[in-house]
Length: 488
Image 1 (cartoon, rainbow, N blue to C red):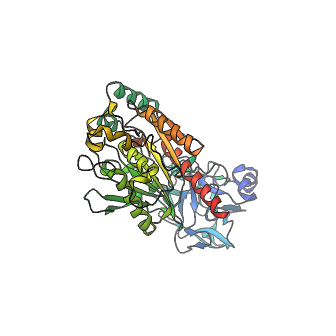
Image 2 (cartoon, rainbow, N blue to C red):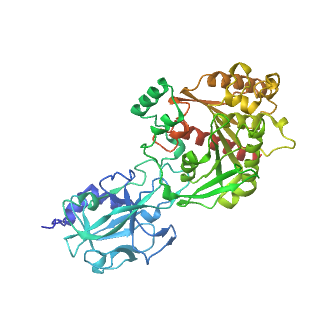
């Protein structure tokens, strides 16, 4: 038997907070139950945007747009039975037909029957002429356009009239909600720590002698904050003549805005002799999913590559990005380069040793050095280091970045993990000490709690936002500093 919706008498309606609040000002009309996929709730949403609404398209339900331009989601109750779009002149909610599958539109307000609505005591919304029908969210949802920088992308669902039923209650109950009921959550404001069970697993594999493979396995089932269908990837774009001189550009198809966006470049690790970009796309995916532009790059490896070829490859990739990234929506003046492990050594050479370039290399807006070692010390000469630095140990003091810093103008952030590899912390501190002495201020430093050498980059795009939030804060602060300097 269909659920019988009770139409509330006007005297009851006016005494109910459900309706008196809606009468006072424009509010969201959102679903009562928070569905698993959209914590902000789903609000009735007029198609189009702001002043460019599309009256010929049916209304849907979209993630409630808190603390932003949300006029296309603002409604109010007009007694006795109409729902008006608050910010638009004389537009009211209407149904195209009073039967299952009927759709919702906005029309010029009138006394027509298809604009008369009933609201039940438990939040059921339906046509006053047919109390057996309820406005209903679809079971399926999809990704929809969202502002850049928002923590998680918006989702939407279709709306239609369907038979009221107890089993469909989570999709059929609505409530009025103030537009500032929730905070607008930006990605850089996130601060969730690593889940306890994952931290325990990372510590366990670390104590067992962690490998990149064993650590990566722990992240296979970790939920991501984005979906791959959001991301467009322009793959294997050549930035130089070598087969490994390639990079991928990641952009999001659902983020709004025409302005050029900051660019996050990522160079993988691999002990100077291994690694490729294909196993590390999550970094570029995540930042592009926020509306930035992600670049995932690779470089030549030892023994074919010798110092300072890695730094030359970083410089060549940055040069290509600065010349071409505006074609992908990126800002050539806001390029931030992340180097992980061995690539951190290459990026450090690029940033701090302009003397290794025959001509001035284009400089990035900032560098993020993750779990790198920055010296060339014969006492810690691994096979990978000998393969890249060469076996003439007498020259290693000249190869080392530590002790040879010649430029301090590129903003930097250093990152180390709680359970990082031997020598990483000492090397980082030595380089930071030199930088601090030469530039007169200390660079940013972040310790990732619960992580080992291999887990830090894998965490980007998961619940654990220790690293990703710090990178976003670094980017935003440097971007604002640049704007301030440009205005003077």
